[in-house]
Amino acid sequence: MASFEELLDAWDGERTVIHRDRDGDAWIFVCLHSTALGPAAGGTRLKTYDTPADGLRDAMRLSAGMTSKLAVAGLPFGGGKAVLAVREIPQGQKRRELLERYGDLIASLGGSYFTSSDVNTGPEDMDIIGERTEHVFGRSEANGGGGNPGPHTAVGVYHGIRASLAHVFGSDDPNGRSVLVQGAGNVGASLAEQLRAAGARVLAADVDEARASAVGDAVVPADAVYDTECDVYAPCALGATLNEETIDRLRCRVVAGSANNQLAEPADAQRLREREILYAPDYVINAGGAVGLFGVEHEGWDQSQLDAAFERIGETLSAIYARADRDGITTAEAADRLAADRLSAAG
Ligand code: NAD
Image (cartoon, rainbow, N blue to C red; front, side, top):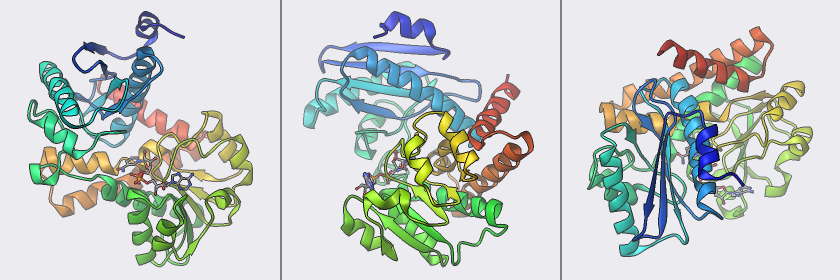
């Protein structure tokens, strides 16, 4: 188990802030992985960990992922992430006070880090942080924020699916295509609605079958997802669904969905390529939520500007697919190279 010192020595990011919050019995880790493209931005994860070092490792890893995600999305922000590592998830006044102190910590960073919500935090928490610092995205709509990012994420995924269909079938029209949406939650339900409106046949799977039947033309049992024939498999539930075991079973031509960390390990991108299944890299196709928050809260975009930005997610994926074909590499590698190009161009 690596210590703080070992983690800090090995990390390739720019700056780490470690704060011991005695009053809340919490550790706060703010990792600024890169500010090459702008202030570091990324959500705040409120979570219990076996050790504080596990929380630091998580913040470091997630902040590096944000650098690639925001670079490929073309946003003027670098990658960051914060973890509030707690013994138990605080509620009520205790939670408020922890978030207030955390907001003061963000304020002390002078705009080098912008936060938003992540696992176990939401718009109400961002409202509290927003009482102490302006460097926060994702406040509730009542407080001038962008609110729930799920529907924006779903629009980006919809455009990503269209770009993927175009690459595989020569037409981006979802009409008549079958799309298996795994996870009929915040993102999946909204995605299913757009796909059905465009004439696609939606197969829906959820551990909560009532949710699946509310959004799909047909329900697929949650444990039958990987064996079900479809044109597109859209993972919108949980991570690591693409692994050595499931990839062999897939009966689709495209994987394109919102879930984070879809590949259990990097080698899974090559496994998909060998099976000639087109993979839309997760951090590229699921950037709509971040793009929407930036557009609404930072730029004051109107709906047509937002729509154009979501469409660009599809265009970016098309460019990534073309690059992967040209260079004989996986689409995941092509996305990473695009991120690296943008970072090196910024110096
Ligand atoms: P959510 O919690 O609203 O929905 C997830 C749904 O998946 C739930 O209905 C749940 O019952 C279902 N589910 C859980 N385990 C399942 C399983 N094994 N099989 C089938 N269904 C299962 O979450 P969400 O906000 O819709 O996000 C979905 C995914 O997209 C998550 O991985 C999330 O990290 C990622 N993501 C979300 C956003 C966003 O804006 N919400 C942005 C980027 C990435």
